Length: 362
Image (cartoon, rainbow, N blue to C red; front, side, top):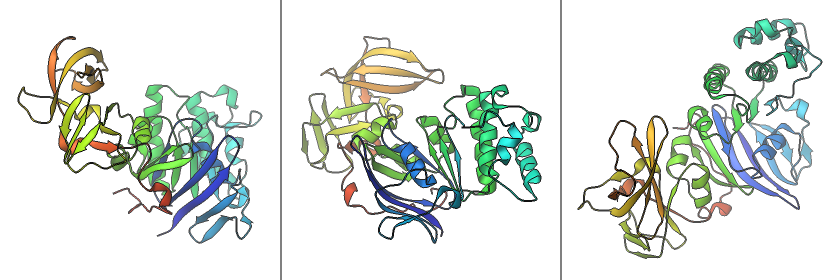
């Protein structure tokens, strides 16, 4: 199976990037992480707009970069399509002219017309960027990237400037285009909904390092580190004081674990949607007080306080009765959803490559 291998290092005074992972030949890979973690730098390196100091980039049998062999293929020869966060359209060119920019030959008109029709922007072909809405500019930028028939598509925060309703519509449209063209995609995003609804795989970057990389469901279910868990929307972290076999203790109380504790673990964590109200005698439960209730539409977010004032958040269906703030409750912590987390993933720095088992993330 053809795949893209990225194994590079980039050292700066203010930032160090050291990443190794493989991208299958199909599907969407999302890069998640805080600002300054290296996500957009990875896109620039893959596009050939920035050169790492060390490492290799290999696309199938084609070597795009090899520091030892002094190989560095220029951007125009990599067949990479890029949609920048600000779309980077040429202000003096119409929509059709922007799409045609960078391609040549007798079929230019046909290719441009195809993508105008495919993305439903025929009526904007003669309009300039300042005459287009954010969603229309995004479609033109995507058409400009796809008209070159790229071997890799890079998207840098593609929906960040769009409102919620338009964002979901364009997610669906982008997914349809990618499924049709079978072009591998790497997408930088801060939006967890973008990752969950679009990505087959997710890589979480923290301070220039990959903390976890796997199919999307697995990454959200098992984030491998405390830092990655926070980025992935986990809210509940119980500080660990000691392990006794399969039991973990803290000033908040104690719960059982599905496996023995490990020395590097600092927190036992659980996602808010996995916590339940427990009966007074139910095992693996903790006493708590309801602190506040926030209506989020489909669910309510209930904030509870454990005896040592550690906050615990749980999601609860909007149509079910909930206890009022100040009520005493017991919270159940199902064994299968508990995770032990440390500051960094175990032995990740010793891993030279991590291959995803299939192009569909299954």
